[in-house]
Image (cartoon, rainbow, N blue to C red):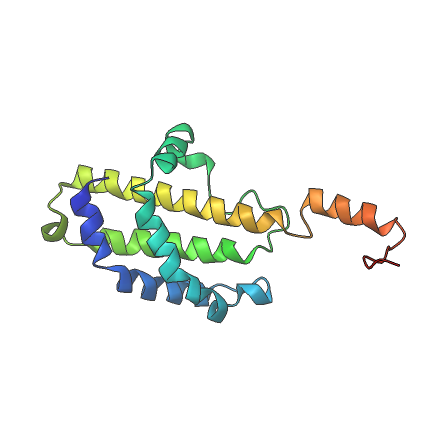
Length: 164
């Protein structure tokens, strides 16, 4: 990622956030946790994490081993109820739109370099999305491993956790 491109894009955070919010509000909420009024509070932190990932060695190592086409946002979610799926899909669209509108005079890159930076930006954003969506899915009651655990627990007699 070219530093000039990242700095130019960083000056457009407010525009990214506004576009993201508009797109998020246009998508139907899958659950109460997926309501846009709840999710808009995550945007600033998500953008901060995105920009910090460009300084992270572990993110670069992960990205070098995973091709971009294999990590579409949210495909690993079994129930498709994860509220972060629409959140990150809207965020990716907002990033792509705003990044393409940043004037060349701000980043001083030719079209090929700017396109490479945009590709890396979106790949890194998908890495962030995958990480956050996966973390939420780990505690989902609809996840196969959690559903099996609940089914197993349902067959056992409840035990009071307090000493007798």
